[in-house]
Image 1 (spheres, helix red, strand yellow):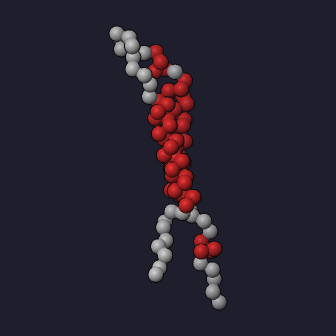
Image 2 (image 1 turned 90 degrees about the horizontal axis):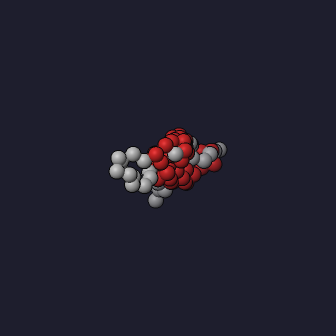
Image 3 (image 1 turned 180 degrees about the horizontal axis):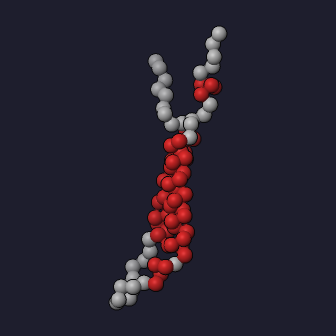
Length: 84
């Protein structure tokens, strides 16, 4: 019975999971409470958390996704040793 070889290794899946968590945390940081004013304007939308920190966390998540996809899993020479 042949062992199936996956394109991604364990490290790739771990990095993908971390990146998905980062993206979700970034979007949660961007969200906020409903406005309580009649005019509908809430000055909280200009907080540093929403316009600086949350986009940085989200972009870090997307960059980690790209890195996780592009990373080669392990050393292929160790998987297939040379035979004489």
